[in-house]
Length: 272
Ligand SMILES: C[S@@+](CC[C@H](N)C(=O)[O-])C[C@H]1O[C@@H](n2cnc3c(N)ncnc32)[C@H](O)[C@@H]1O
Image 1 (cartoon, helix red, strand yellow):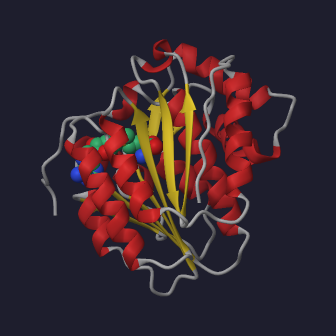
Image 2: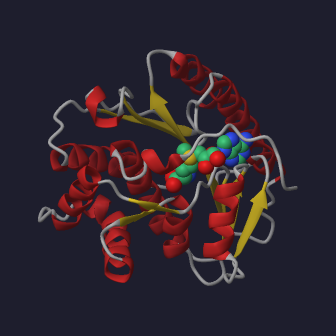
C-alpha cells in the first residue's frame, strides 16, 4: 500500500535526544524481559522511522556518558549493551532507532513488523531490513497496522506506538488506538505508547487512557528543561500490560538517566 498520506515529519533532528534515550532505554528493558520468557515474540513498531540516524555532537556526548557510566544500573544494562554493540560495529557517529534496537534484541523465532508512511523512511528501512526474513515492512498507516496486528502463533507480543505528534490529532488517535488495542489483547501483549510532555495536549489523552486502563497500565514521565529538546518539557510512556518488574525498573532508568545527563528535575508518576 505505497503512498499512504504522510505528515512530512522526519525524526532525524530528534534522534538520540533525551526523549529518544528515555524511550529506547525502557524499550530495551522490556525486550530483554520478554525475550527471556521463552517462546516466539511478535513485535510491531507502528511508527518506525528510518531506523538509523546521524548523531549530532551534543547527543554523541550524552550517549558516550551513558556507555561509560561506571554505576552500571541493572535496569539500564540492556540499552547500554545495544549502544555498545552498535558503537563497536558501526562507530559512534550514528544512532540506532527503534527498528534497529528491536532487531538487535529479538530472537531467531521472533517476528518484527515495521510500519511508516514516509517514502524516505520506507526506503531506508527496506535498505536495512530487506535481507532479514524475520522482518516485514508495511508502507502504510501505523494506526491501521495496530488494529489489524495478528499475534497468533506467538507466546507474547510487544507494540511500540511512537507517532510524531505534529498535530493534535495524534493525541486523539493514540488514545483511541491504545484503548482499542488493549481491548483486543490479553496480558501477554505489552503496548508501549510514547508521548511528549507539551503545554497541554497530552493531558486529555492521559486522562482518557488512565480512565480506561487503570489497573492494567503503568505511566511514567521524565521531565527535562526545555533547552534539552527544543521546547518539549519531557518524555512520557504509557504502558499497557507491563512485564513484571517494569514498575521498579522504570524509575531506576529515569533517575539514572537524569544523573547521567545532569538533569536533576525528574518527576515520576506510576500507575497500575
Ligand atoms: C517519532 S518518529 C519514529 C521514531 C522511531 N519509532 C524511533 O524510536 O526510532 C515518527 C515516524 O512516524 C511516521 N509516521 C507519521 N504518520 C504515520 C502514520 N500514520 N503511520 C505510520 N507512520 C507514520 C513518520 O514518517 C516518522 O518516521
